[in-house]
Image 1: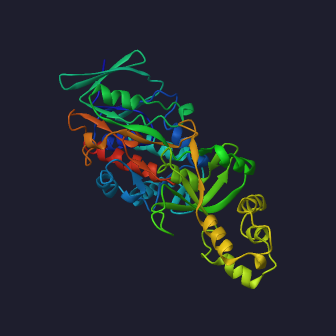
Image 2 (image 1 turned 60 degrees about the horizontal axis):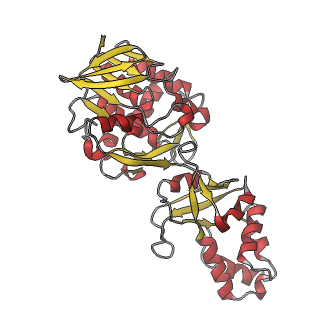
Image 3 (image 1 turned 180 degrees about the horizontal axis):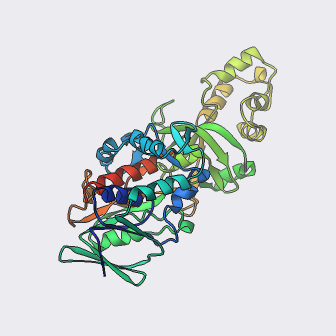
Length: 397
């Protein structure tokens, strides 16, 4: 039987950050990681360079049943603080786009930094498969790979079921339910969408990418789509992917449409202006000037305008421009947790203190990171939540 001040289940981003924070306070901490090495998701993130935070990360960049829950932790541990930590280790980094920060070298540097931060008072134990967790007399007893661990504090940091090939499971939810905590139904997020029906014709464009504006749900009023993302969309042999689609997938619900604005920088009358300036141009030629040829040809064919623009009525051109500004797709699903970068849903924030991440009804039990119903946008936001929630719990243990 090994006794600790705290046991952290999961050696990923949130778990290691929490352990480091607690270790600095002199606590004896055990991190139990079931994989053969810690931080496996960190290592594959950002193409192996780890998109470790986003300089613009704030509460508005997160989804949760309680949109206010993340405010406290995010305010108390900011992207700048993590950047300062990275800088203190001499890790070179760069901003790629939209506030996304990546290592110049390897994600291994971030994992090693976290392990170094843990220090001597933290034991990171890998290949530790948890088979049982019991709470008795104010202490948690954990059975893992033939060993017994006890501590007055237990942190659930095992993430969600996204990317199961990396060992991800729904273990956090099972454990939460064991202790009577509510779980918001998990679903895949930051995930490619699949197309069927008439939309299946767009699969022939597999491999074609273009900058678009993506929006989900019903258009509120012309030009106002509520939440939208201006990034690239990629057509695949199954449907739609690319950053814009991954972002909007977090907001999409089965049965809803996804709207794509092709040529998001063009004004509403661009085809009328082109008709006046170049009446002999065709719609296919016009689209090819802004979009990949295969995509331009496919859109032109579906718009059904074959004449030179000078021979097309203003009404028809205005209708075509409106269609291009809000092209509707009806996804029949997603590619599921196997392809999802993160999970929406998880342990309900109503069960947790937003300041400490401790369960209100189970003293000594904490939940952090992706295990909790807080999900960030694509681009380093989920790592920032891992760091912030890890620090919040680590300071409270």
